[in-house]
Image (cartoon, rainbow, N blue to C red):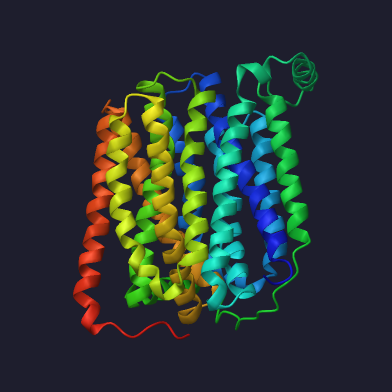
Amino acid sequence: MPTGFHLLIAAQFASALADNALLIVIIARLLELNLPAWWAPMLKFGFTISYVVLAPFVGPLADALPKARLMAWMNGIKLLGVFGLALGLHPFAAFAIVGFGAAAYAPAKYGLVTELVGPQRLVMANGWLEVSVVCAALFGTVLGGLLVSPWLLGLSGLNTAQQWLQGLAWLTPSRLAPSIGLLILVYGLAAALNLGVPASGARYPSSRSLHPRCLCRDFWKANRKLWADADGGLSLAVTTLFWGVGATLQFAVLRWAADVLHLPLSQSAYLQAAVALGVIAGAAIAGRWVPLHAAKRMLAFGVLLGLLIPAVASAGSLLLAIPLLVLIGAVGGLMVVPLNALLQHRGYSLLSAGRSIAVQGFNENASVLAMLAAYAGLLALDVSIVTVMWGFGLSIALAIAGLMWREARSMPEAAGPITH
């Protein structure tokens, strides 16, 4: 891999590690404030809304500035959100600020990967990137569970730190204050690593106008262009479905573990680690053995992914649930890594690195918002978590099967293998 790639992966890992740990800490803060259960999925809603609203602007921004430097600045924005939480800002608002930083971070991150490596190594590079993302989710979830665990919060040394922090007049009293302080350090480390990543040297023509109306018009043209492309539209549909369901499943597993297995939050968070382990394995296999031209063959794993979600919902014990969650992660990684690489390749060919990732982020996060809103609504209506998981699982299985059917019908008209 080229110079700076592994440093980029390390910076991405640190930032995503803090994001995932922060989610668990903020959920614990919701419980500390005795807020209703539906606020938990709404946290992700607030985090994600910036990806959708800012999509027309973050792509040109990522193309106009050195991407590694922009990533460091966005970690600074995330730090503002965490400081806000320490100062007593509502958890939803604090996490929304972190999401604002993440919205511009994403096109810079994926765009820089696309610029640094060629099409021949793009699946492998995406395998590295997705493994780092999922490892960050894995260890971030574990770190978050540890940061809210009664064992850690009860340590005498931490109690001393907590008492000292709560003595500061500008901090809101909370038993989670030391945990929030640790996350501030992790975000700072991520920003420092970003500053060490060298520029790729890629340059793009400047936008015709920086007026918001013009940027929005250009964005919608780019969005239509990517959807109209045979390979781009298919891979965009798959990743849009995958990330929407994945974000919902993140919260559904926590609720299922509490309602069905009667586990506390600090232990329920570790079940997400089982999914992450599976994704690491699936992403590593895909990055090693699935070439770019074979990406569409991985669609069948999406149907299997959907069918496994009801199986987890019906499991009555950890011994059965854990291997099923690992399997869900593995088949998800096998499907999404090659198709994500295909999407980046087509987007880079048709648009530019930053703009194509912004289009991708807009669609994927609009799916996240829609599915989280539906999930929060179902919880507000007291629909059982088992029923919710059955519904989401069967929906994604049918949707991916429909995409496979449409792709099979278009095969005689399809173009040859990827040659760009």
